[in-house]
Image (cartoon, rainbow, N blue to C red; front, top):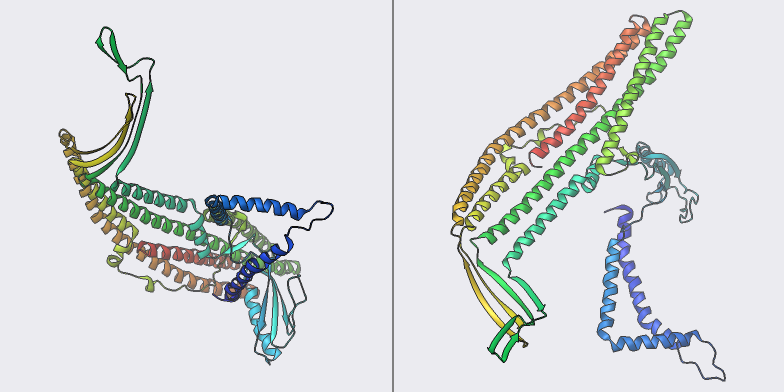
Length: 579
């Protein structure tokens, strides 16, 4: 870490340590002394008036008496406040450094003492040009050899010197943030609904895993019931004159625990299946991450492509404006016909129509990108420009398909599908095996007017007999399902290898298309230059010149389209090879 954050973090721990140390000394030394000195019982005088300190001392003493009388409640109350404070602190937004309220910042340049002002000026000019080239910069005010005046209260001007320079930089502000491709991807991975749902599915799988793990432990249950009748439920006639009645009311209850000892492997395989489910959801989350990243890259380069097309249109529009002035002058002088003027005007109308279409498409693409990454549509701008250069070739990205197969999410998902089918087959077998469990409990009953408690233990053995009829078919069904999963693994693995080879071919084709587009730009630019000279010399027609401009526009548009397609194909190839 460098810059202001590095300087801040260097002094931050020492500052906090010093502040907390002084606070501890004040709390342990100064505060008790002030309490002893100021909160004292006043001397008795002839008349007793109102004293706030007396009231404070009175209720303070009462509070102390209550606290010492109930020490456990006092400690619990104190810990509760600490716990609540921690919870509230966790819910508050946290940031190491606050966001600047001003869309302005200062840049200060310090060179070694004794540096000539000419050298300072040269370095400052170089840095100023770099800043001005950034689309996010509105203006740069430079001061060489001196500092700026105080432009807000918290700023103190620096001492002037030939080795010092300063910039006051104004930016577009936070409302319109310029995003790089990496920033767009990061924002989408944090805010996109698909990623949130994938994260929720992974958490659900984790909870299912914990639920399956709880099956290893005893099942504890409690039961209680009571009854009250208007007549005794049991009557016994010992003789005509003597009868016995009881159970007019009663209470029963018990607490029992049951522990499975053998369930045919259902609990063990169920836990293994839950772990497989967690891994499947983790792989699906990575798959969703790849798909979201690829979609963001498509939207991003679509915005860049449309911006470049608008820039080309603006360049041609300037040329046509200048050409229109020259043709109007020539028509007024009688050198050329009005037909040339009309052709230029028609070409201008065509350019304006294309500008409107490109602006509408750019607005829609920005909105789609902003919605996908979770930001307002009017607050996003992308930071990417194309300089008619050839991108880095794809040679360094190649990896053998067979070696990359094991690292792909799709292949790992197929493997997890085989594992899940195998475990489901084992669980189907376990359902048709005997189960053994032991348990015990504590019971209470009062049915005859007397409390009676007792302990009990038990063991159970359950053997499915008729269940084997349908269970054997379920076992065969799961066995066939396992074979299908194995067949699918073999088949899809071959298709994944073919897909890698096809994507690699597409990537190379896209790179070759960029090369051709760059060559076309050079040829179209030279053709436009020659036709411009020929028209000025009167050796070609206006139609030839306008056709040359159209060819230049088409070559520029083709370049930005192929460049964007190459970047998308590069991302697609990296993902399909597990990277």
